Image (tube, rainbow, N blue to C red; front, side, top):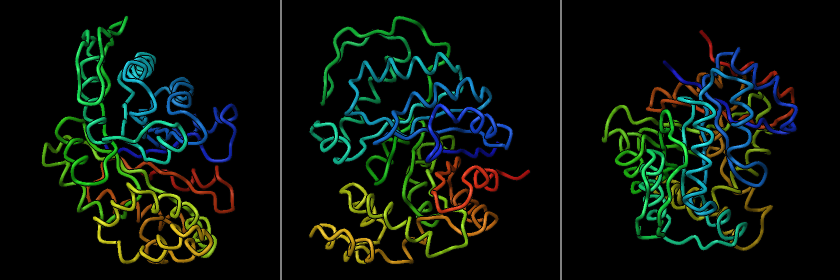
Length: 320
């Protein structure tokens, strides 16, 4: 089955008003609902609501940072949602970024690869119902056990950008969650995960602006892209993908504190590669390229560029 997901909550709509919207996603043919976690909502609450609003859809976190919840709390949160929606929940974890971890939460962003690996190993044991007493490289757990057995432990996926985390996602995880890459970039990234098995799932969060107003799309896209591409982990990712020279000017301006110039220095070609835009049918064709290149589950993040958001969600729905 070809999966086709949507990021929730939908932008600009209060969470308590989204019941009918999310129920309609199920009727439109979407198969998945994936939450994000940042400056607005946590990763679990929207999915807990959606588990009853759209009881046939699979749900996942993309992602829960491994630094901002302790290991036991993360296991308990995941277990609660897995128990509320048996067989329909996927736990996506990742390092996140120094901005979210250090600047927003006051937690050192130290040894992110090791922290993700250790958390993954702990979660595997904890979600199987085992009692965990273990000293990992980045933390220790003494005597934790879930108080209730899970009918089915959830798959655990890893947010991954470069080779080390991609290999971890394939070797120890159930697959990788990708973000901020082009359809062509998938050809570089996906094989690193799939070498550990073709059953390893590739989920990609795709930013979509179903609008023919290219200037308006670029205006919104520049702000979103600058906020990501100048963060250390994403800067290194795009260097690895070969965009270092293209992004050098915007990085200089950003590091000098000139945000306006940083926005203007992002090349239009980069925006056109990373942001899916145009009429809905053209957007669907662009999304299909991600799938052809190795993405198993595209997860749309609809960007507000004028128009009717709900109609945009309808227009982007899978066909057939």
